Length: 541
Image 1 (cartoon, one colour):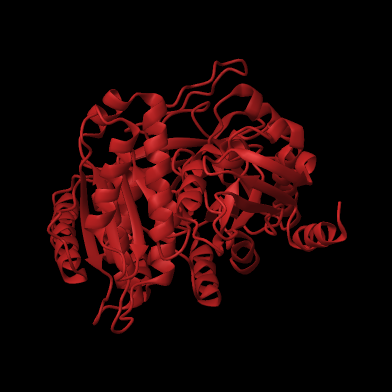
Image 2 (tube, rainbow, N blue to C red):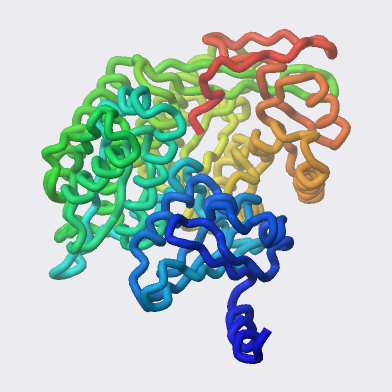
């Protein structure tokens, strides 16, 4: 090796872990560097094979497109990719002069192994998932950004089922990787292009990108894969993201609503501006508000009751009252009620119904959910105290379960209110402990009698020593500060036995009983078979 070649290789390896050269067809002609460490292979095993061999499926189309578009004496834009072994890496490259070959570099991503979470990506397209995309929309957009606002384009491949049938599985996968590459390269950045469903995609881009051109390129890509296949047509909806007159929060909500509506096939392709999207959102909101209001005024909100038991004896401790609506799952309905300021009405109606049940049975204790949004409202607290004050003797049997569906922003105020409720006779439970970042500040600041450990921990019980250690540590913390612990989503006798051994005092879940229209509890056998879930939620929280 000449001194010049060695010097150039040294420069390259100073900034990269692996060097790879590919020809015009993407076949590897040279490979060097930390191949075994990064790729789990050797240069001899790579040379003569396609570059796609070292890439995860979702990134193959991106690299094919980069190689096709690499100009003479031009550096390729750096991209984050996933390698076949699941390692995250940064890919860059250069095409020298008129050479058909391209020199690529791979460097292990700096975020690999760090706490910073990378967005989940669709395995077939390499695009970020819908949740991560919508989070980016909510955080980064939703204000008037001047003369050149970004645009949101949503694309649907028409008759995708027929397209898949004609192309076959292998070519369909290649088409999806080409679509993913096209959208990633035209998006404002790599977290602003997404797959919303099997045949639906979205991206945020600048004014230099034309949606009709994107749709045409998708059709061309499909034709290139199989000239005899069904012609591919891509429909698109482009929304100008300028939002004069809207707050960032409301504009972000409109954008996420538009994306969700498109994914669920309820968005009109006539939407072209934020004004159009706002109108559609307002129309649908009014309809939902009217329906929810009718549910409350016509007394169509019903309660179901799920037992919470003492683990040591399997005896009944109290019931949780669960709101049930005639249309729609409880969780999304309550979230909507919070958005439109109606959750106070829901919480008060649940309280009123629970009080009626308590008045008719002097042996019962019932916990009602109180939204953090309700707890934050002075008007609600006054109304709640007045409602309960009609039957003050029931306070000791009416437990209040604070749910974290929205954040409590004024913890000292919330602590004063909860202490007032405790002095009046109510016992307080903090729901879903461990599910969010605010759980520990809440338990530190708020006077509570019970903590309900989030059910995801119980579901993972026995899955790993790490998860089990976290669960035991949470129980130990609660016992240290003299707060009783409730485990939720307990479904088997083995889970119940292990939780009891670890110090859990109370439990709730299908092993002890499903939600029922009337409070009823029969202690399960220690050897009872696990109850199987049938797809509805235990509570709205």
